[in-house]
Length: 452
Image (tube, rainbow, N blue to C red; front, side, top):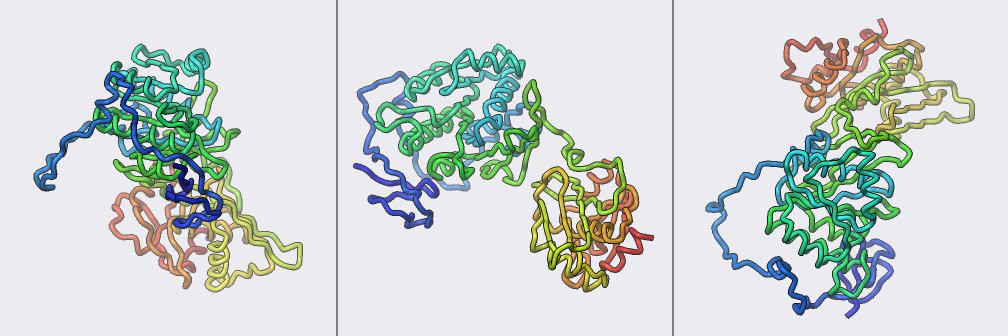
């Protein structure tokens, strides 16, 4: 019987429609076949064991004892931090990214690191041959004796190999290439993806084996297949970055065992991916003091980043002034300009104002407000800010400087990178006495401090 699945939300429908009745997405219903049952004529060794249901009875929640499983560390700090402190036994993680961004490179390096610590790793490839992966492993210097390669696309053969081989971790590259012979549709279809992901999840939970499933993304930037695949796994990681750009970001959009706000930053080199342990230095240039430049601090999860804000204020050449922001909210820029004109009596109506965050950062956090205003004033007055100055504060509509969250982490990162002239809100409490900071309550106090 033919049914239709929405590729955006995974909703099921018996007839096609141009618009999904659940999420409202247009042209997202894809036809597939319903799996009404599993054939049992193929008695693969160990396969029926994973299909059987255990005799589990309800029990009181307060009587259940938690098994404290130790996380497996890959020795790559950026990767372990994104997962929440390491790999949880039995986790099923889906790693998506654009073609060529480095998903297979990352997983091969992580598999080799885990194998070097004594873990038995099974790397299943359904898209590349043994020779191709061997050439990549030579370039990446991945030669651990505990790293095993298995080129196969048949679901039944992979399951039998996992049961016989009994690895400590499995990498499937990629989930779109695996097919189940009981399903008539081709590999990569909605039915194949749902069934194969379900079986891998069942094996991971029953045998306590971590699984990493590499997935392709569509032109819209989401993992190919219905959203229900993301609901079935424990963790969804996106490996982001332009193919030509050497810096890549690993971001968790779903994580049942940690925060979804953590990110990891990597640099693509000729010998593979190298983790960036101090990413703040990527977005700073402390060599020169130029007018229109200020430094602030933002948080990505629990990690502080120092960001350089660049501002350019110039007379408008056309009939109306332009307001352009790269990496910063354009409406927020218009709001801050109104606050400057209202409270500091600086006329910017006849000027073009351009804002850029160095390094291609994109920030929505209000803690950068004070740095943006300082950069605009600096460019307008053609005066550079004092050396080693950093500004941390949110600016209200009346010009008051509001406190920012997790000020201790931001101050620690600023001092570590050599910033001594630190300006914060007077409303920030519980700052340690060993931090030498200057407190301001209102925006009018800023100019006497930074432009003496």
